[in-house]
Length: 339
Image (cartoon, rainbow, N blue to C red; front, top):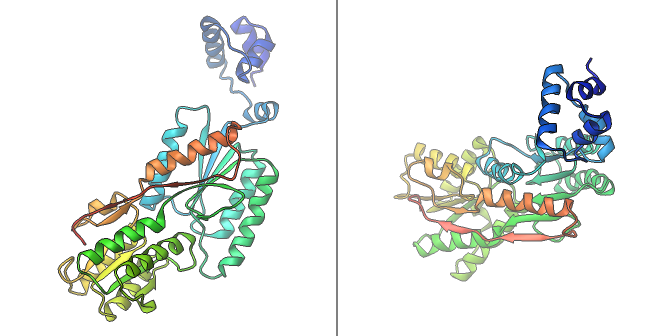
């Protein structure tokens, strides 16, 4: 195995010079840097990243924990984070929990052992088999260990309220208000809503906006017109059938993904969109424009959301901000053809 001393001899520099250069503590002249890089290539030398991290006290690595990378909304946020991190010294690592709270806790413990420099936690792992309070208690224990290790953490669309962690989130309540008001002003009066879960923090915010819009137009809120789709297409189909039986004239889904599933089910039931029933989504993902008719949705500007989260995390790492910070970003209604 090639040693650092051999590389230094071939490059014609002192071993302490090359050691400090590789650790990032020393800038050298361009000619010297070229000799060092050629010597490393010639000897196939690779720096020991673990050892270097121990010396520096940092790994130059940031992590993003997401429920499901395959969801268009999630992938858009991660793209925004990656774009912002790309021009820094940091490497980005993405971990997926499959919406499993236990896997989220395991990921946090693993990152703690890795000496990660910062963590962005996107969304809120949802476990329908457990009370939400139990899931939160378990997650909070893992997060408190991260906090005690002084590892900066930024949430994206997780709690929507003051906490001990900084957070970036879209104005979910106002977005749902805008969308529901749009449907009401189009003449729809029996508006069903499919949420992922009434206990999910994001859906709680959207329900508030939905109810506020109904109140604005003096339309009674009917509990039976709110159904849970649990973010799964087969469950969304069941929820859609339930709402069709309630004779709704419009369905507002709390994600674009669920709206696409509802749209498909409505058509299979022999109904036209928007002729017989309006369908609307939430998120502003690419999927909203890929279906026919194009979905009316709320654009939360996914990549901007990710970029803002990365900015906040970098600010915390550099000591430019003190947590907690809650940054609520504006959203806007994007009218398509489905409602």
